[in-house]
Image (tube, rainbow, N blue to C red; front, side, top):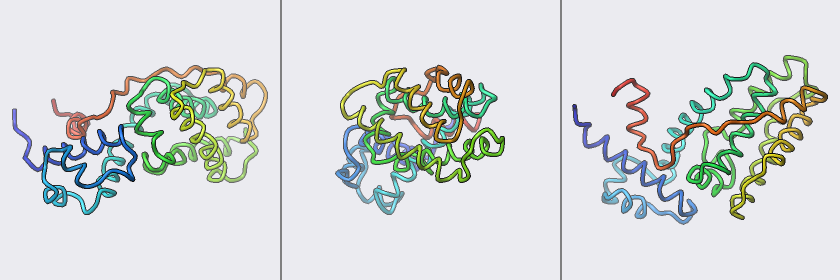
Length: 222
């Protein structure tokens, strides 16, 4: 078995340190010294990899965004109807709140989705809203505005539940989906069926995760 280069392992420790700190502390309170100490490296070593703590966060965010996207893709492929995929997308993040405590800390200690996921929820939701528009099922005319409207109402609610240490009941999650789909002009049976869809909890492993190991697995290495 080939030992990874020291530089690769050091960056992996820094990435894990960022994750660990985000699970416990607001990012505004975290310093380069904190990240370095958590990773067991000097501040000078930190700056060999990143120009600032925000650059380190952006690196981790991009890596974890890819992981979330992969996890979501396997889930959304189970549904052919776009309104059902939108339902699963929203309920996926409810499941994170209810069943994935480390991921809930990662997402809902932030101020918005885009702080923790490249492009925010909009990057995932807007293409689905556009697909719904092109299918002539909905009555919206701007996918970007609609996706932003849904995200800006959805995230603060999840954040509030997380801050209060509360789970979001299934019935309320279905109501949120119903309101989101209604804002797109959907109604009738398709609205009821999509909003009542049960979203399974995916096998998303807890944080922190070794990004080096994730990248190695994606590359097909054992």
